[in-house]
Length: 400
Image (cartoon, rainbow, N blue to C red):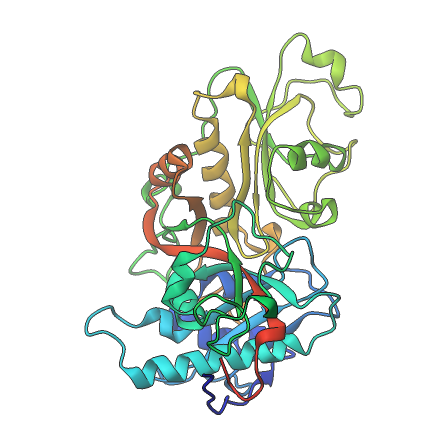
């Protein structure tokens, strides 16, 4: 049989950096993906930022519970939503009480009901980097019975014809909101540079702030942006759906290889001088005439949620530490000049109260990428998944 509960009210935050970000800052690093999505320098008229707390420039008390989301249902095939709940920050012991479970679930369902009211051509939406504690909260423990996908699907997997008599209309033992899930990823966290304790809070020198310098091995000469005409190459090297327009808006770093044969393939560059490793990447992607010469052989981007994404080294150049070098350079640029990498400051203050936090979602079976994250000083945080949600199954009265 179905159950119902009263869903809390949700509020639109039209100026989220001023009215929602202050509530997220005390919950770093758990709130990091949503905070970075709010900070990203571009958005669209169809995006909505919803929360179960009203807009306010004053942070809520640390004990207050709430949930918030960024949603844009026009972004398919890319990730359309990010969600955060203070439920994620509760300690494992003692375990959350039944009332905490019920309150947090109602808050998340209220957000999903709000997302369901946004214009879209399909009842399915993809939520990115969902903490597994929220996944179980919304979908129940039986979500674990689902076969994980390498890339979540927007094709409806379950329907009312599969009804198992539970009243959920899915045949999934009560799972009626979660349609399919990705393989598990580990959220790797890379802490911000330490600050000087005295003298006004300035940063320590780079060689002392816990991050090594980004030195390229011999034969590799430049950190630079992938050119716009090279974005199709980067797209062809990943299964993660991204559009060329999105990639062009992302902060990025590329490594170029220069050899005698390379000079014949760089006629689009304005100079044929050998580039150096001191180039400073900017966003958006450079045009063909603006970029340094050389063959693009490694690259990484900062996703719209501030995560390391599309990290790739061409096979013939692997084993030389290039993945670590390009990732370190990318995160260093984020810490040094977030605005240049596409992320706005929070309110009237600095970049944010957790200046420089970086993160990466690494599939659990991807040992090589986990090694890169560990080599950057990263620490394992929590498990996340990409989730396809059937919004048609979300009841306004909280029924599940």
